[in-house]
Amino acid sequence: MRGKLLLLVAIAGQLPQISFAHSFGEPYKLPIPYWMYIYGAMAALVLSFLILGYFYSAEEASRPPRKFTLGGKKLNIFVKKFHIVTLFKLIILFCFGLAILSGLIGNQDSYRNFNMTFFWISFALGASYLSFVFGNWYHFLNPWKCISARFTNFNAGRHNYPSALAYWPAVILYMAFICLELFGNTQPLSLSLILISYTAINLIAVYLVGAAAWFRYGELFSVMFRLIAKMSPVDYQKDKTGNWHISLRTPFSGLIHERIEHRSLLIFILFMLSSTAYDGLRETRLWFNIFWQDPLQILEAILGKHPLHAYITLRPWYIGFETLCLLLSPFIYLGLFLFFLWLGKALTRSTLSVTELSLRFGYSLLPIALVYHITHYYTLVLSQGIKLRGLFSDPFGWGWDIFGNAISGRLPILPDMGFIWNSQVWLILIGHVASVYLAHAEALRSFANPRQASISQVPMLLLMVIFTGVGLWILAQPLQG
Image (cartoon, rainbow, N blue to C red; front, side):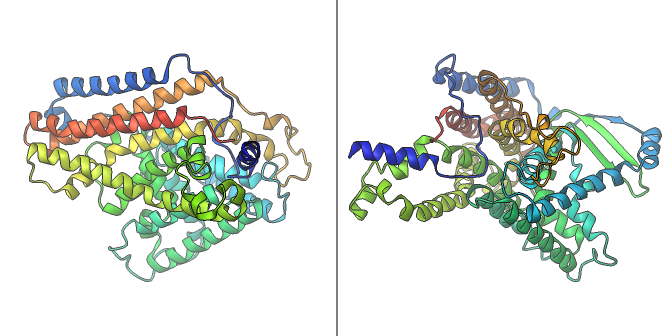
């Protein structure tokens, strides 16, 4: 009996989960015990909190972030002369058009077809990182905005955008997007149909409420990339005369003095955080065993046999269970966030409501969401996303070699596992320290005096410590299979 169960576990671990794994799967033994990493990270957070409390003043927190302006007349002449923006728009539209066409008529092998790697890796992941490095480039190069702009009098809309909707359409689309990523088992053909459907959704929405409102509140990538761009060291805008203004600033400083305008945007941010953490958790052996090993023997009592013997029957229920957990995850995080804000309010006896505090402090969670995203997925960009070079030579998977690099262009970058782990630890620590800084700066502006501000942040510090511990714990867990 035990031997059969072990065989079933092995088989179940090999069944398809999603299109791409989130790590190289190479076992790595930590050079020092895990508890030393977590304690060290927690100590760094506490130390940063103490330093900020002692040296960072309310006057400094009230100052606008420093910027260094670049460009000017020569930059604008260069951009206009060589039609740089138009060129990039054409490249992005070409890539999306090629992705849709390759999925419709190309080889259905996910690793040989251009569209799977382009959309899931290069766009969904890579564009996020580009937004952090280069700012809100997507605002000017959004392919769906480019398409809708081609229709005369189309972008104006027919109705005013309902204020009650706020960012809820983007939240719903984001949840649908993550569900497709984790549970959709998309193939090249189905991905092309999804992209066509998403294009239709955007065009209909623009026709109804106008481009300005929809691409601000509803289109999920516009919302997500704009949030990430707020943390970028690069900020650039185009004025009414068509001139570009580019500024450099300290990373994450774009969130200073920012306030969340609606609770739906807070849910969006929390889902950025919770969905990434949940995706990492569900890949672990521990999560898999909670259901399929049935440690409390609940399922075995209902089924009359071990659940692994009913794997095929229970698999849809397991997917439903995972989907429910995913959709509930931002609200669980919201409950934690509100609870620790309430503790800070109670300690300081502040007259500000918990809702008001959540809108003021919500942006302090964005650095954590960003570094969670990077630590969980950047190896995927290196191992699979870099193969886009070769896929341009053979986008349909038909054996072409247009640019002579169909094989060599698919060689992945495989960093040492020690480098990966240490970079993940540092990224998580940097993100949490940035969040502590942003929260403390907001506290100095929101509370009556520095002492009250520091006291209010003790619960928030505890929350950051919990997030740090959980993030490192998930990364340290062995993967299933």
